[in-house]
Image (cartoon, rainbow over all chains, first blue to last red; front, side, top):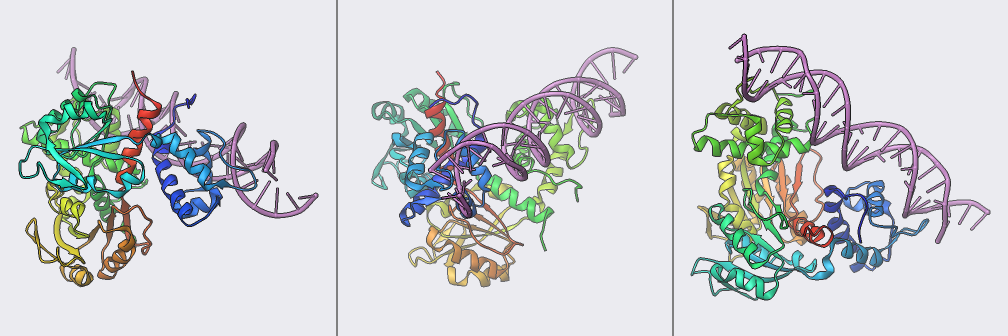
Amino acid sequence: MRQKKAISDAVIERLPLYYRDLLLLQDAGIDIISSEKLGERLGITPEQIRKDLTCFGAFGKKGVGYYVSELSQQIVEIIGLEQHWKIAIAGIGHLGWALANYKTFGRLGFRTTGLFDVDHRIIGQNVGGIVVTPTSEMSEIIRREDIQIGIITTPASVAQQVADQMVEGGIRGIFSFVPLRLSVPDRIFVFREDLSIGLSRISYYLTNKARE
Amino acid sequence: MRQKKAISDAVIERLPLYYRDLLLLQDAGIDIISSEKLGERLGITPEQIRKDLTCFGAFGKKGVGYYVSELSQQIVEIIGLEQHWKIAIAGIGHLGWALANYKTFGRLGFRTTGLFDVDHRIIGQNVGGIVVTPTSEMSEIIRREDIQIGIITTPASVAQQVADQMVEGGIRGIFSFVPLRLSVPDRIFVFREDLSIGLSRISYYLTNKARE
DNA sequence: TAGATTGTTAATCGATTAACAATC
DNA sequence: TAGATTGTTAATCGATTAACAATC
């Protein structure tokens, strides 16, 4: 599936929202949904939803709506979730631990395959069915298991080094929770999650836009 | 400080990035920085930085740049971080635990003041210097301690109920990690963090935009 | 057929980028 | 003063919203 025009990040970020809600609808035994109703559920305008979807094709039926199971399957393919990506997590503190057990990742088809830390109190522990392994073995295991995505939840001071080891193992994408620009080869896709931005935003709004 | 035009979220989300880097510059003993150099460090164009800042005032010196300590102080005031917001966290699983110990929150002036859970194996434990308290006492403590921001890291099934209790206690903002639309009074500001969007984005890019 | 809802095209809105005058 | 860099205005670009023809 190759589009002519580049799809914007805004669209890409809404796709998982659609997908997750479609799964809920499926669970509820609902077969057909209109952009109107879906938009209501998600707080997104129906026009936006239709526009987003037509970036990738025409998945609906005019006068009817979208078949839930069909559309969710289409989105799975668009996002690339049918691949069951293998994940490595480096830094098994509480955050890494939480992510290793994060059910939503599994539901989206991500498979946590390697957990790595340098702390001997953590190495050897079983976290969600996977044994924590020394980070020194990480690049070898990434290569052997063909792990494609790495999550970094280490302290900032070692994050670059950890990223280097992931790259050495042949990782293709990195999801980092460290507030730091990692330098990696161009071919590696890096996405950074910054947990403090959300809090700062709330602070800003409470300070400047208090609604009464 | 009241602006005529509404400031966009995009601007608000960049402010904490500027601030954090300014703190690093301060630590490094650097007194003056140009938008050019700051942009280089952050991967943001200098024009963007200048434009963002002029939403709130003229903080620089033409021909010179920005005084690091002065600008960082200005941003603190814009974001409202000088208030030292008090935080309550509900749901002390690994994610809640991680956030309770998250150093960056403290550095930004957020004070974790209450930790709440329903699990008696967790209640009474000391997490980062704070004892976990039963959620049943949450609204009372929020009110008594004048806690303004609540973080929800509970299972989705109880998130709405927890939000209700926070609202009852007089919370002003909620930062939720639950992939669910919470219904709260209009005056309450809710910001949702969705950890699975980042992974989905990586999946999309690896699938559709593999760079070779 | 009539009613509903999509997919698409056009209009609007807003954010980013570019250019440059102001001024330190 | 000359050089540097801001703050601001104008130009561009892109995303969202609105409108509606197509069609189930």
